[in-house]
Image (cartoon, rainbow, N blue to C red):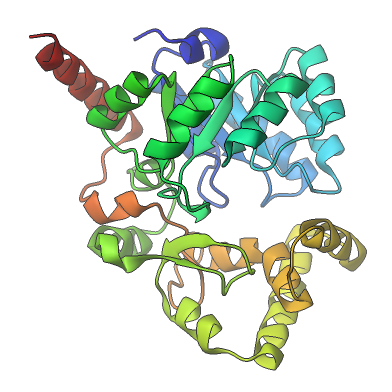
Length: 347
């Protein structure tokens, strides 16, 4: 199935696996790429030197195009961009809008720039700055999310920009792909659905927790970092929502120390990243620290298997997923379903 997205990035399938922290590592990304879709490597949870190693690990497993997801507001974003350029990465994905200068640097080096956005005005802004495509995430998506449904946000963005638009938030099968294409999108981006594959390195006990969830077990909370965050309801989420400011600050400092030790990030850099995150938002410093070390909360679940101590970012689709196919099986299933739906519509 050829679309503006597949032509732009050189993949066979109009499907993107999103750059989920602690989840989208070399194994998942290469399996996705070999299945003909676009895999996105998560870089925010690894030091810069580890990023280079991870990129090379993906390249050792596949010859297909793949991308790397960056935090545009990170103080070392420039260093990460230079690693990507040096290593010949095809696509740069951003969770927050990159600066015009960063976009120009990447494009001058032949890297395709695809920011994720949650509002029409953000899509218009990055398109004017030179972004090659955008991923549009509606409120159904996991992690930090907005409150506008994909079915409302997607057509707004498609009508507003002249670059390929990828739909995210609420997609998991071929019916969703056809629906997104009908809205004018060039493909779909999936996070939770790829997390729940046999190629995902997430512990089996954690996958079982996702599979057991109903749509009502997926909640949106501001307790983690002061911003709307869609995730499975866990003991930690309940605890944070009940905690007072003093206890929340203590937990934030303790987890920040853990992140600093793991990543090698200095306290100064963490404060700088926190200040950048706090800019323009009404967040307490406890929330800023929690936001800065949310990767540690994700690691507790996604790597260590401690669902009682960590957060589990999740799209609403977790409530309708009940199996763990390989990436190859998943992509082929989606494409087969999409062709069947299109055939029925043509009758």
